[in-house]
Image (cartoon, rainbow, N blue to C red; front, top):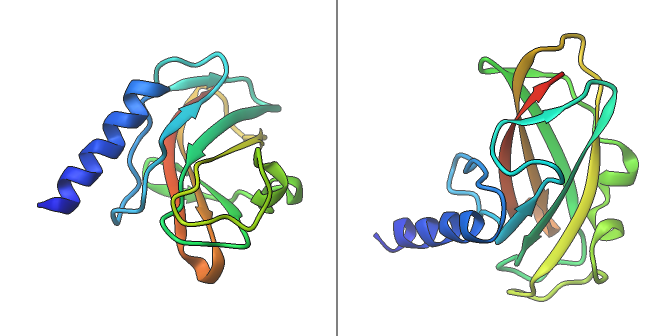
Length: 148
């Protein structure tokens, strides 16, 4: 019951302070706030051959000296190949402070993910996961994106 209440609070926080994003599976921790410039409701519309810009505020529940960003794209339940650019992969290079982080420390990561799709007019789900030391998930969120 407590886990459900915590999850509800996290989802409410994301809704109340930014874009309402989708919750990741497996009860991975959600964000405090997500901002996607030019998008106030999902799905966000992103031109093909452009960048998907975002910022996410979160507070890892554990101390960490590293942050690794992973992005997965899926269409109709099928995962699409997506390679995270090196400049985004090391999350410590894209936060408003520096690593290491303490447990409960609120931090904002800003990044952009290139959109280079073979199709346009489709809506894909982009899942963003940020892991800390030992592969522990610091935050995860998903957003639907319509590629124009």
